[in-house]
Figure 1 (cartoon, one colour):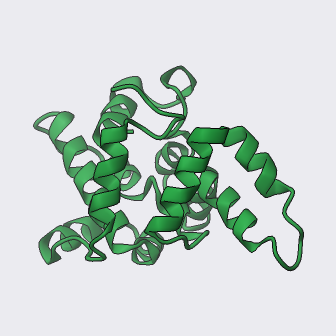
Figure 2: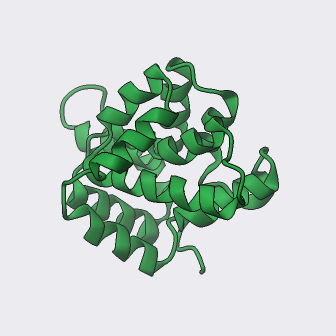
Length: 185
């Protein structure tokens, strides 16, 4: 699967889009499973995530648990899977705005769009530009939120590194590869 501008494949993007059309969160059983893996501060972040983002997170965590073998992975690994996209709570963009930002970043380049958003006026009409930059920086924002919530360094690091190329990962390659493959992007 080749990545398009760091956003995964078209199939991944289409799957996330159609999945996001339903606002529902994970099933009650999946929600209970996820919450049982998260520390108190992480649970507060979990509840801030949209229903589709929480559903995606559970899918990723279950795939990671399955791919790493018969022994359950450490809590910090599953927390990393469940909260890797938590930084998306900051810009508060809906599905169609996320699609617009993603397509603009693919068309014009993430770096160019980040520079454009950084040039947003401090007051007034810069809201959309600021939120665009926040969405494109959700990895860094998520790492910051997780650190403030008291998450394990592993969980914080994966949130920051989950969109980086493999050669830039600082985590155990086998575990990080399982996390990346489960995320699909």
